[in-house]
Image (tube, rainbow, N blue to C red; front, top):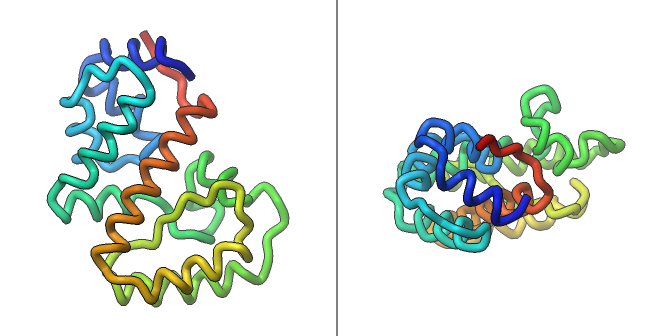
Length: 168
């Protein structure tokens, strides 16, 4: 995707914009409505800069909706979007790390009250176990901030890879 696609997004009616952008963010309607209202962007860089500004400025309940829209790391393959399926490596061999991630996810959610969301960025599940273990030691506010940054990094990566078709 490129800036011509962003120009097309800028021209879409609000509902069509929300539908087009939803896969980048795994849904999260309150956030997507705010993002639609912030148009025009003119460029992909500006779109995702604004996305991060909006995400970090929203009320906490909307921030957590955005974070929780993403599937759990290591969730059942049938429960994740096609983008998450590829990003989390379900199309490759699975490992015993899935069971460990399940336990760590439960501990994280009990401690912080929202899902652990991280930009996988090609890392294997075994590589992500220590990342989640370290996150369990962090401050809650720091984790909200980190997760929101990663949500936008995931969306930016999906946009860059052309993971969504934009209608005109």
